[in-house]
Structures are given as C-alpha cells and as structure tokens.
Amino acid sequence: MDRDERVKAQLAEWTNIMVQNCHNGALTGDPQKPIPISQVFTVPGPRAGALELHAGIRSGTLMRLLSQNDCATLRQFVPWHFRGDPACFMSGRYVRVEAGWPDSLAEKDIKLRDLGKNPKGGGRWIAGKNEIGQTIALGLNDNSPHFLICGTTGSGKSYAMRSAVGQLCKDKDNSIVLIDGKWGEGLGPLFNVRGLVGPLAKDIETAKRALSWCVSEMRHRYENLNGKGPLIVVIDELQELTTQDADFAEFLRRLTTQGRGAKVHCILGTQHPVKAMFGDVSTTKMNIPGRLALKVLDAKASEVAIGSSQPRADHLLGTGDSYCVVPGAVHRAQLAYIPENDLADLPHSEPILDEWPEFDGECLGTLQESTSGFDELETVVSLMCAHYGKGRPFLKNVLAETGRDKPGSSRASRLLAWGKDVNTLLHQYHHRLSLTD
Image 1: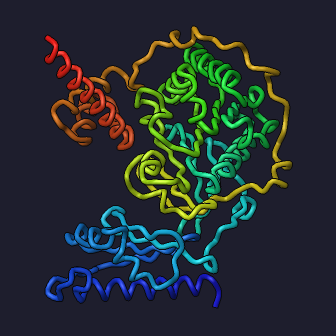
Image 2 (image 1 turned 90 degrees about the vertical axis):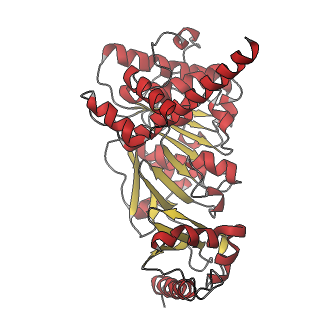
Image 3 (image 1 turned 30 degrees about the vertical axis):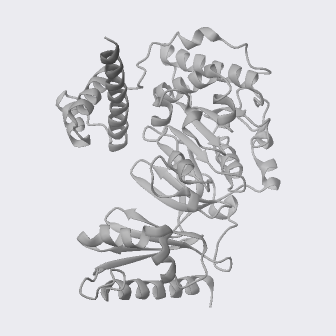
C-alpha cells in the first residue's frame, strides 16, 4: 500500500471515530445530548492529517470539548501515533482538527525543483505544497505588500527566505536589498545574486545605512513617479536590529506604512517574534498582512507570527511545516527549499553600489505622511468607527458613500485595528489628564 492509500485509510478511520463519538453522546457524556455531524472533509496534508467537521449550531460546543485541557479528549480519538501536539480551531463554519503524521507518512523533503519553475513576474514565488498536494505561491502585491517570516531554530526559516530571494532575483525588474542581523548567517549564501542594489549588510551601522538609502529611494519614487520596478527589502533576524536602534525601527515603519504605492516591499524574518521588535508603535505590525509562520516556541510568539490567536504556530512540527497567511486565507503547507548545491545555479551579478551611502538622518523627516499609513479620510472614518463601536461593514459603507471604492476586508480590518489602538490611547491620556487637572 503506497502513502496515499495509507493516508486515505487513516483519515477514513479517524472520520468514523469522530462521527460515532459525536453522535452517541460520548463527547458530552450524555447519550441524550449528541453532537450531530452533517458533513466531514478530510485533508491529507504533507505533514499532518486534518478533518473539518460541520456541526451547525453545536460547533462551539464541539470545539470547546475537543480543545479543552490541551486537547485531552481529541488525543484519545486520533488513530495513529501522531507527532507533536494535535490542534482544534474554527475554520470558517467548520471545526478543524489536526494531528501530525508519523515519520513514515510525513513529507518533509520537498525541493523547489520538484514543484516547478518560479512564477513569472508579479513579485511572486513558490512557497511549497499545500494540504491537497497543490503548489502554493505567495506574492508581494497591493493585498499583501509585505511579509513576515517567523520560525525558531530548525523550523526552516532561513531556507524559506533563501527560496523566496532565489526566485525573486530571477525577475530582472526586481531590485533587492539584503540585510542580515546575524552577520550573514541566514542570507550570506545570496550575497551575489542578480538584482542587488548594494552589498549584504551584516551589522547595525551598515544595515542602518542600507535602510536609509531605501527610505530615500522611496521618497524619490514618490516625487518623480518614474515607474521603476519593485524594490524588495529583505531583512533577516529583524529583532536584532530594531531593538538595538530606534532610527532603524523608524525607517522600517516608514517603509511598511508608505512603501506599497512606490513598489517598495519588505520581507522580514525573525527567530523570536515579539511585539517589541516592531518598535514603540503598532503601525509596522499592522501593515504586514502577509505571514509565513513556521514553528515557534510558544503561544505568544505564535500570535505575533500568525497575526491572530489561531491557528497555533507553536503546534507546527518544524523542518518546513508552516502556515501561509494572506488576507482572507490560511494554508498549512510544507515549504519547498533550494538545496545548497542549487544556489550556484541562480543568476548572479555584482551589486550596483560598492558600498552603502552614509546614514542620512534627514530622511527621517523629509517625507510628509499620515502616521497611520492611511489617508486623511480613512483615518477620520476609522477613529469614528472605533469611538462609536462600529464594525467593518459600517466602515466600508461609509467610505463607499464618499464616492471611492470600498476597501478590501484586510485593509478595512487594519483600519479598524488602528482606530481602536488610537482610541484606547486617547482614553488613557484623557484619564491621566482628569486625574491631574
């Protein structure tokens, strides 16, 4: 029996176990209180098997029973010796349960060349294989102008970043800036790929000069509207840089809040995703909707990596097992990588600049901006919605009534989140003033 047949058999057995125990009241402990399952989808992922269970109005009860006490009940129902920790969370209308495959069924080693050539243009790259065996591609675009790639040691983060850059450098329209907060440990093998603007920045002073150049270039693009191709800023070990230097954190904030319109995109990597690495303001984090989350160490790190509390990246199995998060979709995927020997086959050239120009402190104040990254009308509407407790549909309708297109759900969500953050601060300061007046 080949792998596909064994996986199919295991998922069929798991389906029968779950449906039977829901229908006979075993989960509730009362035969008079069954949880009827009307529909089940099986998901034969490369690293984990999953079921999506439709329980209608009893979905909340089902999820609570299966996820309580560290999924203690769910663990009893998995018919194979699973790896790692099982998971249970809502996926749309369905209760989704996941359990890692044993090594004999896991697909851990997926090379990029086995999935095909990289997508042509559009800032896209092949990420890996999704749960139904399809090749999944990610891209830098208006919906996901920037990406955060998180993963602890052994998760595959460095390979994921090298794979992305290795594919993006094949597009002659792309210009690339490489910054590595661990002295080139992660991005070092890419030091001479095609499209580099300047040399790989491996220390905080060189990194600050490189990022200063990027902000100046962004300003130049807005002032001249010259139609240049994408500028892709790739930073590994982000936390080593933003926590050392406030200017670096401010440069990064400007790129993430203002870069989209100038075709300036960021791909940011970190082993230790914490809120502090985004600096003192939340706008940097809010303007990075694309996430590639590999295994992290705990639930707090997972929330930063994913951008929400579910799914849990600390339950992933390492070695390329990941969640790919883009506005409106989450995919569990096994990432593809470029083997060390294949890196020599990438297109190579010398960087345009021999060295990065001296740090330009003036560019911190030269580009007029809205600190939220949104225009004036969006800012006013988001604050109004936060103050009156209105939701996303109301915000989108108000903006549409002004004659402009409705914002997408992702941008509307970020508008609401920003408005709530500012509204909270305003209340805090009002409270402080009232105590001292």
